[in-house]
Image (cartoon, rainbow, N blue to C red; front, side, top):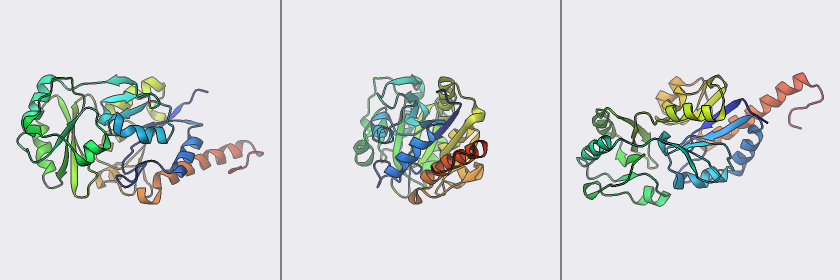
Length: 272
């Protein structure tokens, strides 16, 4: 059955309480199953494929998902990349030049696993990149320093620079992508693939990069733990990630759907 609606959600700080929580709860999995009867369910995350795979497969998602900060759309079952935009070589060179001014911060690019992010990273001073790059990031930059680096990187005309909450308290990650490859751009492509109108979309998130997500959807839902800028842009604010706020929202969405159906069909009782 063709669906006409899409629900697009962030992972970290929305679907799971990372880094302490590695996979989605069974309650969330069941809530997704009920909602996907009427909605395409698509993640939109800053995580690259290897890092995102355990969550996407844990939720048993089948609809296309946005990964790598909006630079790729993948098949969550197979990992096949069905859309991608790379950084321009000159823009990558300019990015590296600025990153090397801050050698105390580690970097990552393209696909990496959780361990590479939480315990690794690369020394930018000796980094030589000969392959195409779609996603580049500085990791665990102190919150008081990150805006300064973002301002410098933002002067590169061909890139989009997004500051996100890192998986360590007091730190930010800085994502650098092609300026035409943010969550906003990727969602526009995703909706073409799904043949869904923006008018029929819901977006749920918590971080600075979800401003891009909000720009691309109709109904904007911020987590209770979301950054202030996202809450200010939201149509509604739901519970904290630590209180299963996203799961409760999906359960309510499913219940409201049944309630509407019950008004049309007196023999359909919500919850049955």
